[in-house]
Length: 333
Image (cartoon, rainbow, N blue to C red):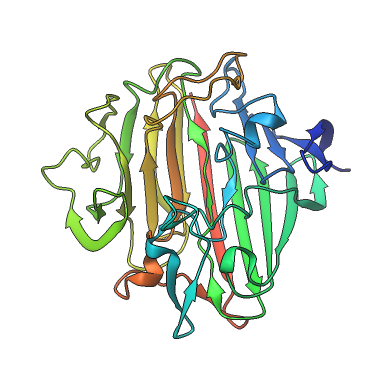
């Protein structure tokens, strides 16, 4: 018995895109074959969606390209669009300000149709192949992403293989709003991290790691998340110095009483407040565009620009040592 499939749209390249619905006794989850997007998450007994998404494929091909997608092959930013790979300097597509690389370039895991390898009512396994030298990254790479629901838990497992040494740092880029409307003002947030990687004015990691103590970035004790243009969040929390076993790292609670716990194997967690843009003219789940600060991104990943900072956890993978990530979200009310 397979998952429930629905026609979702046809891409600008003429590719058919499906919405795959997974269900457990407590969750109803929609995944798109476009970008491996986590398009919708619903908790039994709660009328509103818990993650931001759109009913239109055109939204994901335009302003909402990062919403719920699996971003890669290297999420976040690479300074000067170059890094060492297997001891050699490699140059990538400079798709940010004509100088740096953002989210692996203009062609990556978030911007194409994935193949469904298998499915059931509770899981779907998707695959995408990235060709050697796509956006400058070496290696023919095969990325497999599985979403699975079990009770109130939603798991994503990502495996990446390559035929040459390369860089892989993938992340689900969902925006969460546990109240289903407005902004995330007043959400309670806890992050189990006492350090963060410092950004320069260009939001590039400088290589410096600082304590969160006595800064606005400290969520080691749960506190309300504030939204304002003067109080922005777009930074990586240092959860660990290397990948590890699945570990609880974050909790979020909305004013509605809905709660989410996040666990991951990844050493970093990027926190982004969606304060820099709105989705107009593309509608969200409610039919209206999302305003600024309407969601909070919590992206389990390696540390940003890791290939240019030898002290950061490595994101280099080889044929003998493939990529693996496991992240779990658990919901309650």
